[in-house]
Amino acid sequence: MGRFFQEVSPQLSPDGRYLLLPGLAAYPPAGVEGTGLWLIDLVEGTSRELLPDGKIATWSPTSDAITYVTGDTLYSLSIAEGAEPQPLFQHPDLWAPYAKWSPDGQWIAALTSSLEGTDEYETGYAATYWLVPTNGDPARELSTQAAGAIEYSASEMSWSPDSQFLLVRNRVFDLEGKQMSTDYPGRVNWLPNDSRLLATSSDGMHIVTIAGEEIARINDYQYDSSEHTWAFSHDGRRLAYSLPRTEGATVAVYDLERDESQVIGAISGADFVGIESIGMMRWSADDSRPILSVYRVDKSHYEIWTLEAQPGGAAELLLENAELVEAVPYP
Image (tube, rainbow, N blue to C red; front, side, top):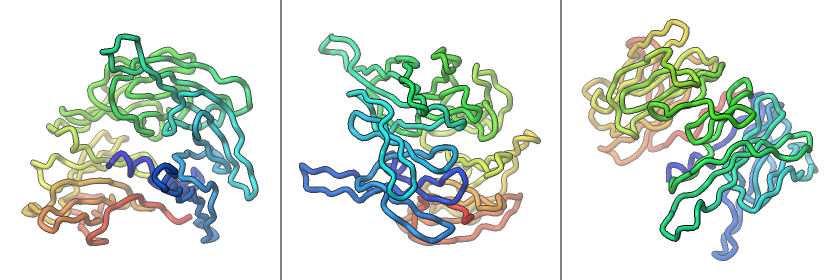
């Protein structure tokens, strides 16, 4: 269920003006109608339906178009009124969650998946990664990898900020399809401003190169697999992260330039035991405080809190009985 909400979360355009709000996909056999893909203009305060069916879509770097998969076709669609979807690539085994526009605008990354092998007892899949040029040239097969029987999620594919590398299912490839990475110590994600990676594992959090060399160790806490909650500030200079449950509902901030971590405080005091976990985390528009969703065991509901990003920072309850879906700065 958590993966489902990640896939249909609002997508802010790179220029901060528009919000892409995906609805539910139609399922005619059960009589379920789609609830549409909506565009919200945060400047004008208007909204309109882009597509009649819910889609998992991502933005172009210029904020004037989106890309998405429907059936066996990858499309781009201008957000201008009256625009028609433009087919870019067709394949019978396309997976809808994967359509990622490169930051330089030249490529859209896509994924196809098929059964691997012919042995009736084999359950693995093969995933093929594709680079689709946005100028209409033919798509290029990047690499084929064993996928295994694990869940697919749009968050498993992302571009490096310089558009030179593609991270897919915890492996990094260059634009020629060469795998540049080894087995990382845990799950990795790109840093916001360069081609280094944040690695999160049961042995803590650290920053590594594409080759897997450790550059900086953020912490040595022992985490359970589901405990990692973190968010980069909008300027990419700081990382807010939760400590393990054994440390209470506590948040720290790591300064990437200073290579320094500081505990900024607990959500509601060190003696507060009603919080089961810290969920989604984001930053305020001015990067002065993290915003986070916490689950209250004693009340059986979520709450949304903020915490000043300095040691001893004051915590403030924003909303009770509410779960954080996204935090969007007004332009």
